[in-house]
Length: 425
Picture 1 (cartoon, helix red, strand yellow):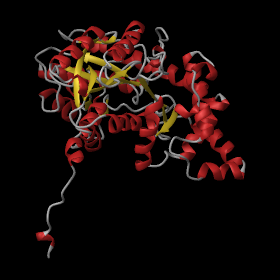
Picture 2 (cartoon, one colour):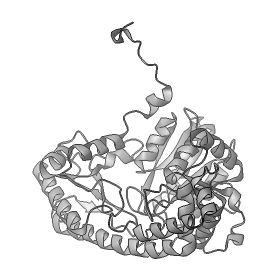
Picture 3 (tube, rainbow, N blue to C red):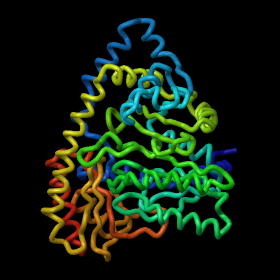
């Protein structure tokens, strides 16, 4: 049989669910247009990557041959014991408690390949095709891809400058109950700090309310909250808020996930989760199928950096740098967009993003005139806001990132973007 007569490959339903992700298109555009100033990429600042701290940690890991060999050997599925202890202490500091006051030990800590792996694993072990996850509208579009990838349904809940509206969450649950779909609701997803895409945080009151709602509506099965705290440590001003996890006295309604990719190094790809007791086993079972343990050396390196105090010192430098970048973007927005009727933007207190709304008639999508004008002619890229909505998305919004560009690059990118907007309005 020749190649011309090969039968087609029979691909899985899971591939069908996951195909044509927007992140792949954005990456392709960046590669094909290298001269473009990207205000799209959610990458971290290149100049403040922790070369000194990482080198010191590596040297300490390798200084003793026995310890070095343990670090270079396979690890375990939930993660290296010493690294999990260091992460537990780190989490306790963020919560303003001692590790003993948390009420659990390292058995509830699972180390992952960034927080993205835990988001994916949570979908894998909790959601069957047709199950429902409630999300803020708008929300992190890659997580919407995770839901799509397991055949689950994302139901959008209205949000404002205090995050997901809990009155709208209650209303959505009532509607699902009336439609006979309550037993399909398994998960509520919240990005609790400086969310991607809008840069807003859920208020303290709503954090308590969302836990209460999840508990009250857990009638046929427990509804879990998946708290994505990826940007928690990138706080520049405003109050320090308690985690959603801390608002759950049982410790059994919230899956907490955080990453060191934004605050330390994305190249190490180390994240962690704090899991309810009866979710630990299923997550580790699924994780074992994928990697039977994320990179052991990287975990132990993060553990050393946390123990040495190098992480906290580096974080201070990172935040000082991002404040300058955020302010450069906000000043450029004022300079170049304030004269455009209908243009408005969020002033984030942390994170990596500025959310911008443009005149209602303007389509910011991949197929709209603005995206082509911006990328092909003006030489600047953004992320269309419509990607972040579960359904019924506005067409006139965009997410802008100040993470990877220099302040001068941000100012020039904003100038180009405003020119592209004017060219199509």
